[in-house]
Length: 489
Ligand code: ADP
Ligand code: MG
Image (tube, rainbow, N blue to C red; front, top):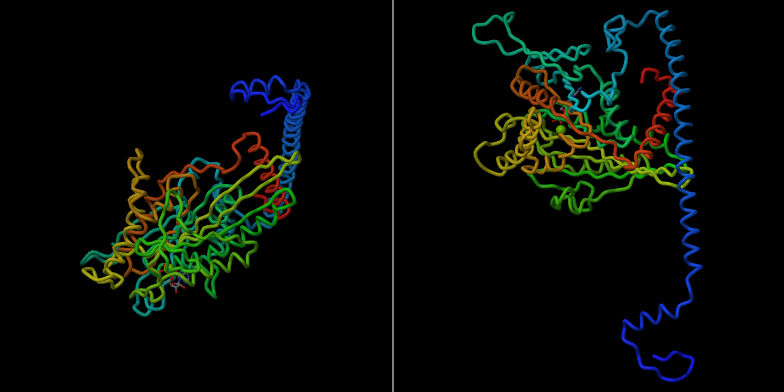
């Protein structure tokens, strides 16, 4: 290599010497050092400005929060006075509000900040007697006390016992609903609170559990005459998105729908829903996740998945499904603050319609051979493992939790004792002929009540960012409450 000046060929220096010569020949780098200093100075100034702006924003939010809280308090006092004058409200030891006929008139939502709200919330719902049961003159053995949230089941008479001497067992749950309670009323209590907390960035799960024909799909799905929890949640999510989204806050909502049938996972939204998928790590490999922009596009995927779901007739309910179906909504939100800094939050909502929890004999499945027996064994594997996990998690000293023993519990690991807020809706048949299954569901649901979860808000880890985000959400909620006059929250 020549030096390009003398035209004389100089010997090529060794790589080490060549490096030194480059350094020696280079012009003194005063400019770049100064430039670096200048950049560092600007960055420092920007950081200071951001810090100050964060403080200003926090103070501003706190001022606004105090003002909104005052407004709400003032309106609340005025509203109470108005209602007292109309004398339609009595306070029931400060918990439920009931009217003069003893009916509950106020939605009972959840205060998630209470320590007991970390537990899985368990509600029971009884359906009315169906036409077959009425024809068979089946007795209704369930009594739901909706005010005190107690469910009482009458045990069958022992031989020779008079009916007045029959025993009963009472269970207490987070909510109890009888056959006349509508899904809209149920949704407005715990599911509403849960979807609201999903929008705030908490993973959330709703599980419908119960024997075939007890009302799981009725409660969760959509049919031409009835709107279940999944379609209601979809509307709620998009309403929440629309009221929060602006030029600084962008939402990304996606959905997936899987089915576990015979311990095999299928993607109900893929081009080939018969293809089996495997779990790799925490994810289902090859699962299609679809962006949804509106209630309509989200409902389209919900309906497509439902149509693809494997159903098989049983003697109890011709349309009953023997598969577990998990409809999942994924949310990612990016909020860009006035200095251009991005704050992220994300959450996942699992809406689960489980297969029937009954034992084999009852649904007419052969108990000794053939594919039906294998199918039933495998359906029970996921449900019995779910039971084992719940049992293990309900103990004071939690030992080994067998999540890995079934596909369902692997996929729902977070929802059971992990980073999620979870509720179970245990569906019940009120007929005496279903006493054993109803009793077993009640016991299962009662054990589930003792499971503690560890939910955390899935937002950026910087505590200052979190505080700002929290205040911002709180302000929006307070403002909405004031606008809709939802004064008790
Ligand atoms: P599952 O999914 O638990 O097998 P379904 O949801 O299919 O049971 O319910 C079985 C039948 O009972 C359906 O015809 C459904 O319409 C009816 N049903 C269930 N729950 C209710 C309810 N709360 N009110 C009225 N009908 C109900
Ligand atoms: Mg069903």
